[in-house]
Amino acid sequence: MIFDVTVEVRLRPGIADPQGATVERALPALGFDGVSGVRVGKCIRFTVDAPDEATAAAEVDDLCHRFLTNPVIEDSVVSLSVAAGTTA
Amino acid sequence: MAPRIAVIRFPGTNCEFDVAEAVTGLGGVADIIFHDQTDLGGADAVVVAGGFAHGDYLRPGAIARFSPIMSAVGAFAADGGPVVGICNGFQVLTEANLLPGALQKNAGLKFRCEMAELVVASSDSVLTSSATVGDVLRVPINHFEGNYTCSPETLAELRGDDRIVVRYAVNPNGSVDDIAGICNEGRNVVGLMPHPERACNELLGSVDGRVMMGSLLAAAGASV
Image 1 (cartoon, rainbow over the protein chains, first blue to last red):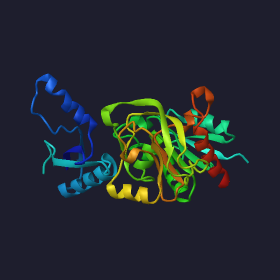
Image 2: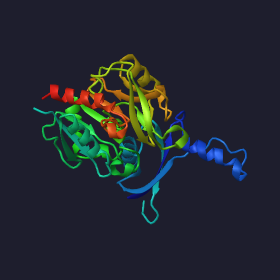
Image 3: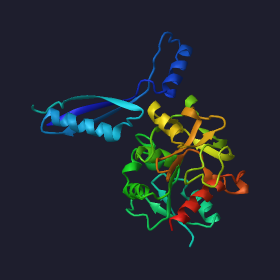
Image 4: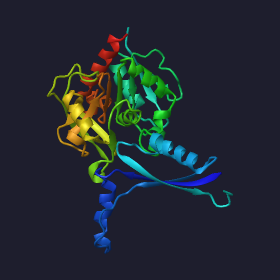
């Protein structure tokens, strides 16, 4: 089965985010008042071919830990679904 | 016999010749080793040079740590061999878990390219054995992601075990505890953001990097 996977890589809470802070500081000049808590991360999409969802999820979890994130400063949120056109 | 220093070159590394020049100027022999090699050619010490290994894609050092040569560097370090990571090389060593912590974007989002003053915090490392604690060394920095960070537990360990090797006199990037460089438990692996290899010739405005590169050559010589 093919699964669509989206991994959101985020800076862990408490880790300074100079990029997010810079974006936030620019907002009032554009007329966006009241926006706060801006954090910049990245989004990585790919597909995984696995026999079932649990196997796919375990593989993605391992991939996130060993490669896509640096656990010292980042964590990740994974969403995984059966790819369109694939029979369950 | 002159100590042999393996200078690791990934696609995107750009400081390997500066390191080789500094090593040669101090009487060592530099071998530039490409990242797809699997052995260090009998080197007495390793320098992971700066630049943008693998384009810094994903995160600086994230892809470089999986390069074939890194298994050899890891084994060499585990055997007590002297290993120094400079700038991007420091990032590679943290990603490879040879040093703790991580390097994130500079506070203020500025690329910092300037002469920095470093205060030697420990002389018990392969890079500072010829220096004295409290020495102030003028060594250039040249980085965007040099803001060293780690967990409070790791920081306590680094402080308690005298593993902070150099600190900035004036913090340019927001690093925790003004850290510019640290070493591992065995004190044979050092990572730092500043470039000592660029401070080994009067024409470059400082020769203070010689004490660091000289310490490394001495450590390499001791393991010949």
